[in-house]
Image 1 (cartoon, rainbow, N blue to C red):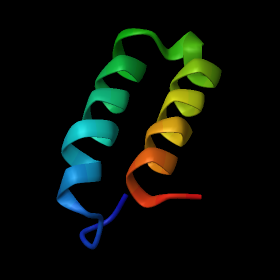
Image 2 (image 1 turned 90 degrees about the horizontal axis):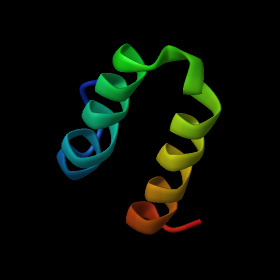
Image 3 (image 1 turned 90 degrees about the vertical axis):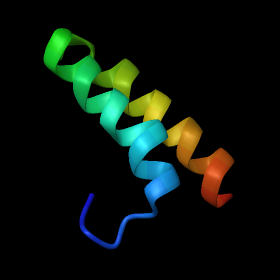
Image 4 (image 1 turned 60 degrees about the vertical axis):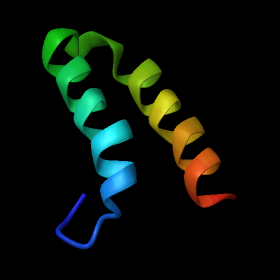
Length: 45
């Protein structure tokens, strides 16, 4: 994530994912799977 990241992706996907990782760092596989699924729904492929 960088300054060019789309705000809709950053605020609805990445910020909650980072917060979830801080709460539960052992579930990195689940978190990244969720990020990927949401990425596809926002950006396509």
